[in-house]
Length: 386
Image (cartoon, rainbow, N blue to C red; front, side, top):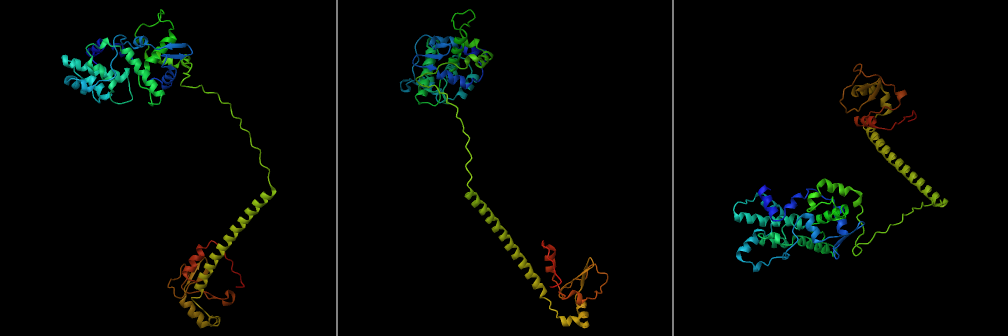
């Protein structure tokens, strides 16, 4: 804000709030403070003793007024005159983001803008710090002060802030709310001040407001110190001490006795499974071999050459003229009569004479059978008896 707007805020009695450090306070500390806050007696129960939370201490902690009357809880819209209804509607369903933007950008020239800024700022400071809520927009509890901006210092702000906090803590403990609304920061300031300076008028004790003394560095140092861990006794009415549970001794389980019958049965089952697997493999291999032998027999039947015809020289000449030879590493393989493939890597186109007595039956092979022979993974041994 500009310096003129800061002067207006200080004139309204909120100048000390400019010293509130911009920081994130640990949730664990705030939760501990709320757990030890006795709403009925209005005190914190700690190991250092009972710390009473009074409106006077709230006023000294954050520098707000502690005299005058209390604000009404809400405004009866039907009883307002047209001018006040217009003022009420100007902050109706207004969010915190809009309030912050209006406070920064709003003009304060002229008496009307000056009053409008005061009304906007008083709703903003409640929603932001003094009476914060989890709802994104301003609540009815934030609206009554906008009609008293001219005498804003004549109202009891300290009691207004403390009553709101105590009521919201009760709602949380009764299960009406999932979280606690209110200025928990003031509980932390009072706790830090009371534990570090037990005597109110000690020579080194800070004067009001305490928020100006507790800078960001001092708060972080105080939070990390051992004096805040643990804070002290819990509220017996709402919390119970956790009993230490004894350590569980895990006993090692003894190995079960081995039964000879069960082990023999399991071994027999394993052997039987292995035998079944081998039998299945043998069957599969036999089926593959049968299929491949059928293919070879089908190829062999394509040319039937009688032994007596092959013995004649005329038949041998005719056969050699019709069937070309394939020379692969000096081994001759005959092709079918219907094949027109010429000889490959042959020394000459003249076929070598065949010796029927040594080779026995001469069989022509189809090209598909030759391919199967090269692709076959198994090795077949042909004996001289066949």
